[in-house]
Length: 401
Image (cartoon, rainbow, N blue to C red; front, top):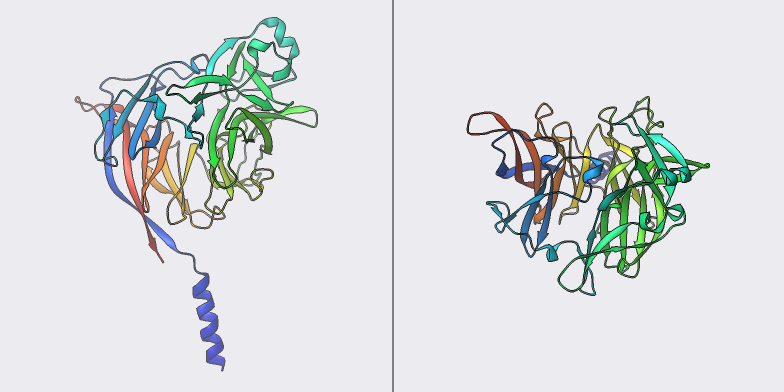
């Protein structure tokens, strides 16, 4: 009898062991490489998208500053064989964005920044400092600005061509920011169409909010739209949070940056998950993870899942595992097989001492494979000198125990 009990307990323990996975590199390609030295902002910030089984990579060839938001040059390449080879293309912009049931597509759009009149600065509702410039950032209720300065924008394509449009944001506390007299029209994040509820959801940042009568560092605001993106209502807020044990930064609450660059995903079971950047001008800081089981209305307390990282990207593979890519320093991958409750140790794609902007693109390829794109500043040119490059790698995630 005693042996039976021991055997039963042993079987129970086996049943609670979580499956482990192995990340294997399957293919690598240098998509493009600079022959000469390039300034910051060029050969950087790659993105990855899929349309009609074709993979598209784009990257910036612009200076990285607030005045260039919504402007500048982007280079694009395409692969029709899952990244085995790439070729330059003239991108058909009609394929971009989120496809809606009515046949239209919508996508993020950044209207060029404008210079704010000095007389308007009197309407400021608060100030914080930017961690990179150490300069003041002023905040305004959008409703208090003159009409030509108001609003957030998306672009919509219902007839073969994208047209920018001003969205109707149903949020009386919608806050805008200005630095050095420049007012950007940044409404940036992830937009997802939920087929189950037939509602569009968006996780947007920078998203400043009022709490206790003061403007708080940026969080992430969740919006929903039931009219295919014409109007958006505030659903919930992922408020800025600092883990005092794992994120010991002295200037945590005296700066404007807060949470940035959200990566938002709706899992197959309907759970909303989000990973956000907190790295700022004072140095590398953690990635935080949070989830919602009520479609974005409330969120779990953000928890640290990586010591550092910028522009996190999430994808859920066919086997249900979530893969996360990020960088700076280096480039890393992580995975979670339990919906984000726990995460693997980092898989190193690019060592921390290698130059990179840290931004990545991440997409599922097929079955349990995925593709990653990133910048690598240490690829050799014809004179054996380190130069910037855009690299793609395809991985498989193999189950082990």
